[in-house]
Image (cartoon, rainbow, N blue to C red; front, side, top):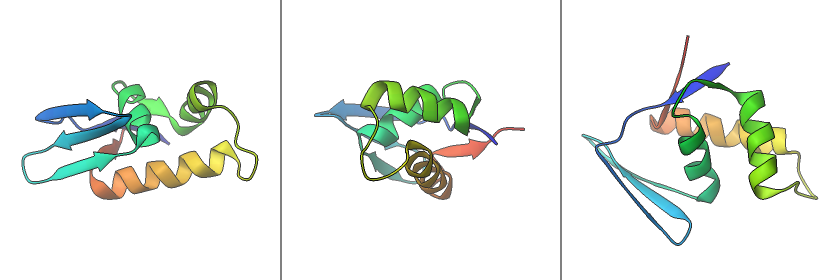
Length: 86
């Protein structure tokens, strides 16, 4: 699956978090969510996101980067921050 970010009207980043303003809502992202949003400026596979996030944040000891990334991508899709790119 490839994903791409939806363009926000405005964005504010402070203390590692990002707030995105869309036409009908405001979404607050964690550092990982903000990184995914940043990386997905162009279409990207979830596998490529896993690799890039592992470089940026390191490898967690209690969960796989793949599982964490897949859950984050699912949440961002559900929130409308990302969309599936064909």
